[in-house]
Amino acid sequence: MQTASEIDAGIAVQYLLRIGDTALIQAQRLAEWCGHAPALEEDIALSNIALDLLGQARAVLTRAGTVEGRARDEDQLAFLRDEREYRNVTLVELPRGDFAVTMARSAMLAIFFKLLWQRLAGSSDAELAAIAGKAVKEARYHRQHAADWVVRLGDGTGESRRRMEAALQELWPYTAELFADDEIDRHAAATGLGPRWSELEAAWRGEMESILAEAGLQAPAATPFLSTGKRGLHSEHMGYILAELQYLQRAYPGGVW
Amino acid sequence: MSAAADLAQPSRVDRAWQVLAGVLDPEVPALSVCELGIVRDVIDRDGELEIVLTPTYSGCPATEMIERNVLAALDAEGLMPARATLRRAPAWTTDWITGAGRRKLREYGIAPPGPVARQEGVPVRFVRRDAAIACPRCGSRETERISAFGSTACKALYRCLACREPFEHFKPI
Image (cartoon, rainbow over the protein chains, first blue to last red):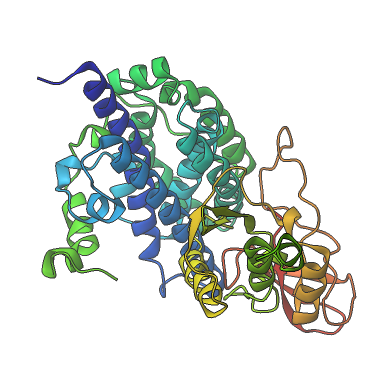
């Protein structure tokens, strides 16, 4: 029988995993560009952003492991869970696509993370608040970089505009999951751990729309589709990411640096 | 040992600070970890020194190397036992880089960061086209940014339009 405090900790861990796993998988997707980006400067930029996200993921997963109290560290959480134990939103596990897809998603995520870290800087969990105080500065920079590209591609050539429009059409349905609340959000808000993610939606939408307006683009219409990654039910792409991400630990169990 | 002798000897904490002043940042080996502003505290905990460090960026791969280098330097000076701990709050800012650190950055060929602008309430939609980053080689302010990201998380790429040399700029954060 679980005690009330064990149940509380379990829910807090879920909330933390949603943050840490979303940063981790986005980092993994961005890292795929290393050595493949269209220009050297962008190769460096995407690797830098991936590294920031990986650092944020490490800190949050470490915190999740501590709160969980089962002696799992960041590496065990990142490399030794099975697919359904990951709590990232589905948006980040979609294939990296072309450069427009990558930049559209990077803008969506960076704005979301910036708003989330701003709120988490006031978390009742001092460790999470400290992580957020650092991460918000990084998310702000990521956002500026991605917004630059959304505008440049949207307001660029006919081809770049066509690609950015296609990217928005492809990704937009998956943004609904970011703001779909459930009992985990309500519990986090009630304990002061962090905001219900739905509270971030209006500001997120406002920032996205102002960037899209600058780019001469429009946000696609909302659809009834709701992805379920943060509940552990992932798309067909997730297993392939984990196959690559976890290869070393699966092939050489317990291997350390 | 007499009280007078005690006073004449620098404390272990003071000696640790002296040692740390000689530990260079592995990615910008022109300035010490103290000049970079990442050593937040040195505490003597019943004979064990605690070196409190703060990370520059969440994903900075040098953080762990810095911890190892710090402990190795203390060990070499006979100041063990010691351990390094991480303090995340308040978050590191380039405003903590010392005056000497800024000068050394410039001499090393990296344009030092200006003061951090207040971010709250400022509509920062795009990467700002920072005006007037002075070239660390010739001092000209006729410079332009090539890339918002550089060889490490803390830097951006610039070039000087006067002397035509590329250089790095330590981003204010």
